[in-house]
Length: 135
Image (cartoon, rainbow, N blue to C red; front, top):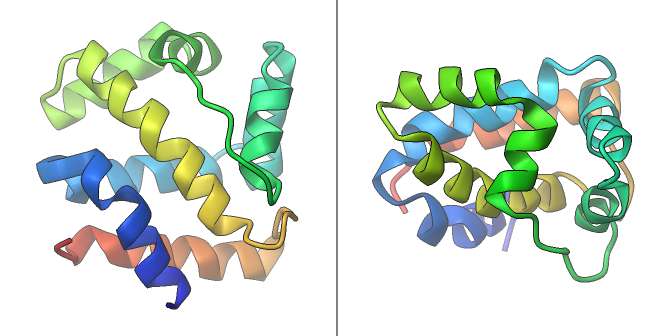
């Protein structure tokens, strides 16, 4: 099973009919952070959730994150903005994001290491290809 198939399998049941809209948000969260994926992990660490976020990178079991924790890290205004773009209420959006983000990070880091530069960009491009796929 290639990486794209793994991503489809891991997240298909989570996002349901909003998959096309949620994937670009995940990609933006990862790519627009200062420092890319490392920057996103640092954002979680600064809120005291580093152990959770680094579990998504590691090769072991992913620790869960609650919708409230996602909102705390990303900020209520950002969550409201992202969810309104999708036409979703913030509770539904943060619930889906709390399931999807760990899987996306885990898929981007199969060796337990954060990819940088061109490697990260290629992997994000693969995730971006999902927005046109059907699960």
